[in-house]
Length: 136
Length: 98
Image (cartoon, rainbow over all chains, first blue to last red):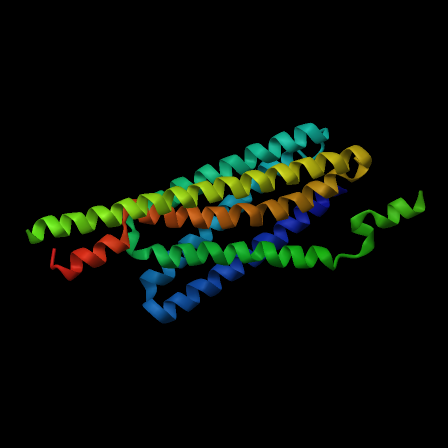
């Protein structure tokens, strides 16, 4: 059951991230042309890629005991951080002229997490476990 | 003489940039470290109280961790820019025609 909820949340998150990355690409296309739009899309792509990678690693650990889940979670987050640093160092080293749109594209995908938190706060009670607790 | 002054100015910018990058890394490490420690601790606490909710808590933890990570990654990205393609140095070099 939780696997389904996790898959649904991740699918929603990825959809919103893709939309936000496309919007930032559109914005930069109007400001600085196609090159800046591509850079913003690449930044958004970095965000989406990192979310997919983390979601796969966290999702695979869902059925385990809590200790195993936390271990898998921390490993996934460490991998995400290392990969993000590597990718942004590559951008800063060789594509410094496009740094602003790349970071903005990435930041746009981070906004999706805020929206996901907002969505979580308005979920029906059945998915928060309250109903289950009340019925016991 | 002008060359020495310019070198001094560039050295000053580089030194301040190094301090700024160090502060960014330290703040990012401290923030994510404390945040993830609290997150993992609370998750284990919640899972110990109600083991049947561990999966649901993991979903919530994933969302909050995404936010926690994203902000420090953006900070580290700017630190990488300051380290590898410092725009502050470029402004000085451009002003003196170098």
